[in-house]
Amino acid sequence: MADHAGPVPHQPRTVDQLAREQPQASILVVASPLYITALADDLARAAGSLRHAERLLLVSSPAPLAKGALAPHWIPSSAHHQERLGGSRLGLHARVAREILLASQGKQLNAVEVQKKYQQFIKKSAPLRQYNRKTMTDDNVRAFIRQVMAQGTKSWSTALRQMRAQHFACEQHRFKNLFVQVQENP
Image 1 (cartoon, rainbow, N blue to C red):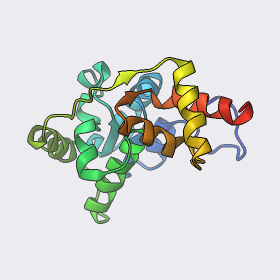
Image 2: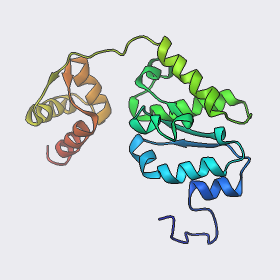
Image 3: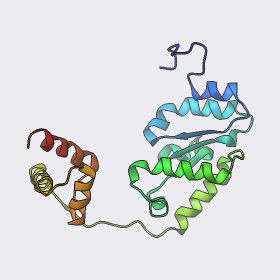
């Protein structure tokens, strides 16, 4: 995709191109470990193109790549931050990035300093909560969904919270797909 001219020709199409155009910039990448793995070569080149390599920050879950060449730039976004920042794990990286930007107060970002701070947050945080929930078959999940929909529940996220409150387990993506199936074919 980076080889495509894009909607505006001659504009940066890679992170490295952005870094070469703005070598004084701070670049904050918020992505899954798989996406960062796909961009690893481009991100490593971008770090080399920045006048201050520590201004490249990668907010993501801990992963094997976090111990490689990109390790100095990796800001650990862990479930340990969830209690402090709230919300679901799905948007946790974005909330960590928001917190980083708000704390910077317009100053240049520094991956070394931010990384230390977030590693400390993890060390000081309580152990992750372990859930002891019973798994359900797809048919059982569909039956539960029909039941809560009959009681007025209209969103899959509300229904999933209701199910988990009753100590049943279902992965979020799977539950959403089943919820949509039930909506389409009650």
